[in-house]
Length: 201
Image (cartoon, rainbow, N blue to C red):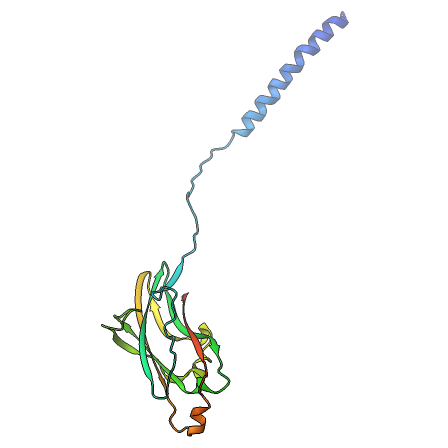
């Protein structure tokens, strides 16, 4: 039997290489598609936070700026607070930025705060009280309610926009003081800021 020539062996080698690659490729293709498959998808999932916003109608103005106050003076005013929320929450009021007179005037200016409906920053006309959230107390005591945890009011708000009006009444009470003690309060200044905060529940 004749041994194949070197030329024939080279030709056979060249032909057999692509055939072997083709066979291997077919085997890989068959193994890749050898099982049934099925898929399903729940698309479009996303998570967004809710929001809460609280505004009032004071247009950046102080509710009270009382000058030349005398013992026995009193007055009241209203402010309308509006909540706009996509989630439920609770509004509470508290005091911030107390001004200490150094003469005890903060112990003699008393405030009472009622919550209700009707009335605005411009006028309390039409205000209808629902309840008293701050019973009459001196500014020095009110200053102790200085954060949301100690806040008063407990107005529960639902999703959407809703409003509540607060009526603040103040009086300068010198009951029980001697004339000397009253005179010592001349030229004094005290103050406090009322802050309402809405937190989601």
